[in-house]
Image (cartoon, rainbow, N blue to C red; front, side, top):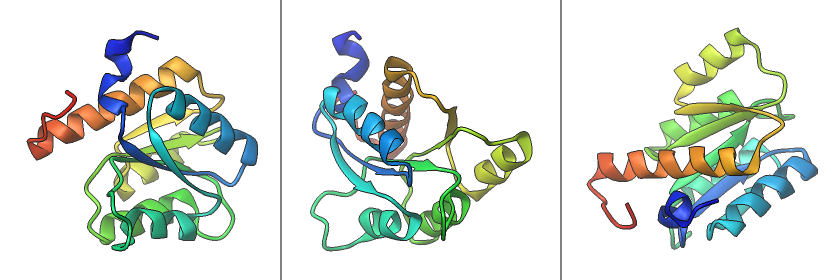
Length: 144
């Protein structure tokens, strides 16, 4: 992994939502190695709270969300995040999504999709690119 690939992630905050503890730990490991501050949730309701909670000092620079979770699934979580006004990147991850689910997720407000199992450098690259694109849209050139 080259420094240029992850430099814009240093100090960024990413919310990672996944009900599978092994997948959650792996994504957090990859992101922390890239200098990211991670907030984690094991379900959509908790994840939504981490993204839109006004008491949180630092807004999320990106959200990584699993598709299939008990209770509020990734599609409902993404819709709720968007309805709450979050305009940063939402990256969908799933080990079993079909094309119909993928289309539904994109229509719910997801920016991009990754299939599990995740490749560490590829995962970090997708998050980096999503944060960079969001920063350019917002006019935030810090770290880009």
